[in-house]
Every structure is written in C-alpha cells, then in structure tokens.
Image 1: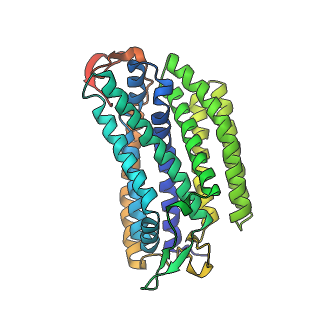
Image 2: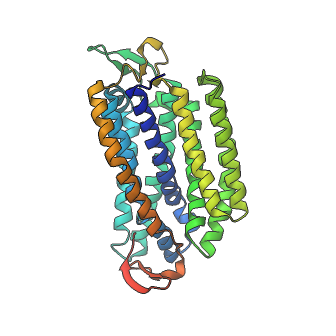
Length: 358
C-alpha cells in the first residue's frame, strides 16, 4: 500500500496543529490566569517572564499550519477562511491585541496602565482558547454547503450557525484544557508561592476540564466517527490526562506537563482522524464535502512543498528546541529586581539589569 502526497500533507498539517495546541495552549492558559495567580506586579512579571522568550515562536506553528493549508489544500483554505471569516477575524484581532499588550504593558509604570494591558492579555488569550475549539468542532460536525458559480463548495450559513451546542462544548473543552495546561506550565517554570498557587489551580480546573472533555470526546466519537479505531485515541488522551493530573497532585510538574501535552496532541490527532478523508464535511449534502482528494493542489506543487518541508522543518524544530533548553530554568518573583523595568536576577549570574521578556 502506497501513501499519496495528499495523505502525507494532511498528516503534516495535523502535526502542525498538534504543536500549536501544545505550545500556544499553555501560552493562552498563562494569559487567562495572569490576574488569578499573579497577586502583585512582581509576581505578574515573573509569570510573563516565563513566556517572554517563547510566546512569539509558538505562534509560528499557526502561521505554518495556515500556510501549509493554503498551499496543499487551497479549496479547503478558501472555503474555511471565507465561511469562518468572523470567528477567525476575532481570533486574529485577539492575538494582535495580546501581542501588543505583552510589549506595551512595560512602557509605563502606572498601575492603571498595566492593569488595562493585563486585561487585554486575558481577553486576547481567552478568545482564541474558546474559538479554536468552536471552529474545530464545527469542522468535525460539518457545516451547510452550497455549490458556487465555479463549481466549488462554499459555506452556506452565518456566524450564529457556528454557535451550536456541540461547538460550544468544543470551545469549553479547549478553554479548560488550555487553562489547566497553562497552570501546569507555571507550576513547572516558577518557584515560591506562585508555584503553589499554580499547582493547586491546575488540579481544580483540571477536574472541570475532565468532565467537559469526556462529554466532547464521547459526543464526537459516537455522533461523528465511523471508525472503531479512533476509540483508541480517546482512551489514550483520557489516560494521559488523568496521569497528568495525578502527577500534578504529586508535585511532579515535569511529568504532569508531558502528559498534558500528549493529551492535547492526542485530541488533535483524534479530531483529524475522525475527519479523514474529509477536511470539511457538508452537513446537508455529502456530495459537497471537501476531502483531501478534491481540495488538494497538484502533485507537482505537493512534491515541491515536500522537498522544502524535509529541508527546513528539522532546522526550525532544532532552533525552537534550543530556545526552550536555554530558558529551561525556573523563575521566581524574588529574581525580579525591578518590577517597573523587568530586571531579572539570574541565579549564579548576578543582577543582569537586562530586560528579559515581558
């Protein structure tokens, strides 16, 4: 049995979304929990410093996933981005607002100024964390489609059609999973009182996420999957999530974060597996559904893309892995020597006086 280029690229796109949900997932979680765990400016500085070296690099996974979708499956890209225009625009605006807030909250030492930008970080993290789940749930569920003038399939609905009960449960699933993932990340990357708070909060939100995620995964499997083997992915995701919560309770933050990351990656793999070979099912007429076969680029385009991916993907992965390794140490509020300017006193290196991160 030979594997076609279309199959290779849907797998690669799924892997890109796995990476995005795992890495940007804890970004969103930290942003949402910023005022909850960070009780003082010094503590909030410490929390944001954990993200400073990596948050913009994490968003590269989204850009590459979008670019790969555009190049490999242009019909899917066109239908998705035109039909889901408003929710995707809201996500984009939220991501821009969040990035600007990271940079601008430090421009003035006025508490009111920083409080407003902190609120922007919370909103800019909350909106994508919720709407990504809504978007993916609608793709799995299927949306009404119509035939366009050029014979292409187009979304035939409005924004509020996307806010159905199944999609809202999907949104709450990603929201609570990301919040738990972010709290576990903070427990792993910080020290002192905020580490204790993050550990406790991860356990509390994790229980809520467990209930919602079980409902969503079972609903998806029973209502939208025609493959018995996808049950295995449900079981793996569930067991890893429970293992992550158990490790968090035991104070083993590294193992907890690993299991949490596997859960998010497994959930994305599950959704793509349920979809396959569809990429955008039509709920009103299966003949209008987009698949990896009728939505793909030419074989020549896919061959060129494969060569480029083989060359550059290892380089990008190596660089990002190196970044995480360099900034692997914990951050403590006591290291923030000047909360107004973000100076960080690194253990064993003295006070650098250098602004690190946000």
